[in-house]
Length: 300
Image 1 (cartoon, one colour):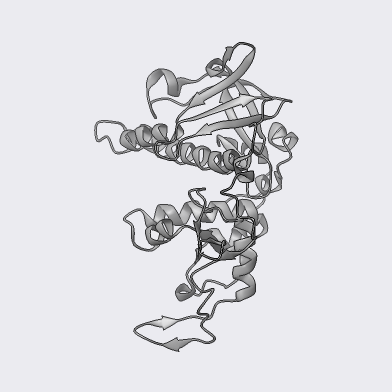
Image 2: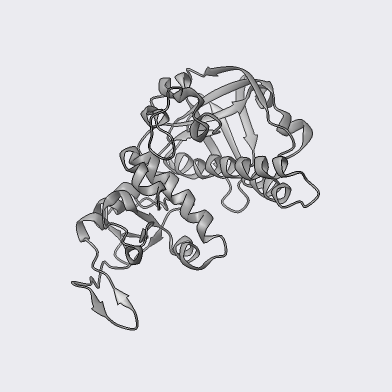
């Protein structure tokens, strides 16, 4: 908790349990203390990395890994009928942490933003015993005073490389692909429903101001997968606004209940077999941005 705070990340949510009650031992709050990635969404990003996995070549310290692949391996372990329930439960939790780690990388890479690294020393049993088999034991943590930069990230498979203290020579955001217009659009930008009305179903009014704030917050990048939205003929960036607690379930039309996500993830959030898992991930994203709303978001 101390090193996360030293990285410039708000740790006040640690003082409350998932049900909103106050805990006397925030540093032991299981919703936070076991995480592998912290911050983002306007805060610095801090990532936990085992010191033994760092490499040095020509005086350059780097870290190469693939947390998307790690998450898939953990998914398999969580569904292995030959594994005991404790292993399957641990693997499910670790798969979520691995995905949060992976989702933090594209944004930092595309904007050449620094990443804070928390180096870990101890017994990384996950690396020794196999995915989900044993819990790792950390004996020492240290926040590296030097910033790290994601030098490469593969959208195709999730392979990445981070380097200590060396920013990209040229930010990807500053290249020709940058959205210089500052225009962010969603699916309602051209046709805004003015009132609730009957069609083949119910159409609910959505605040243009709320949608605008959410699109500006996302700054053209999907708040679920981290990929850049689609470019429009006007030079803007298109994402789709999505109510995490649906309006049909009396979810409020407020900024803390709305995300901007790519069209692919929007379809998944509504129709995919893992839509409940996606909803949980989006809730956790909103809680990090709006910790004061966590009791409302997590009770649905």
